[in-house]
Amino acid sequence: MKNLIFAALLAALFISCKKEAGPQGPSGANGTNGNANVKSNQYTVSWTQSFPGYYCTIYDPNITQAIVDSGAVEVYMQNSPGWNALPLTITYTATITSVYTPVHYLGQIIIWKFDTDDTQTSDDGPTTFKVVCIASGIQQIHPNVNWNKYEDVRTTFNLSD
Image (tube, rainbow, N blue to C red; front, side, top):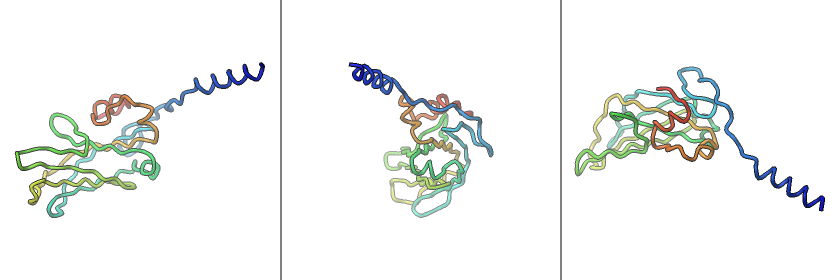
């Protein structure tokens, strides 16, 4: 009987345990905005032609090997009046649509832009992006965050603009 009571207490202890996110740390150096679990930077870039499209490269020191291996990188493009999550498709006319696709690697992101009409894509000129690096497990701890809306991410993690 004592073993049964001990087992029930032990089971209750483990079932009631819940993993919590650690405390938020101070903002990082070099303009990094965020905390120990979520870091954000803003970049304004120019595009490089690569027929039939364009690309830009963003170097971000927050894209560490740990982020590449088990974290996440969210990229948002400034598009009046707010921010749009990438990948993003923007329809201009019935026949022309631009597609923006990010690919991240250790320390960098390459964003590709192509138009769907198979002609040379136009240069957007200077474009501003926000890059948000998210430590492993944070998205599971915050299941109600809409990661496609920068405003939700900014509010949840106290990111400043």
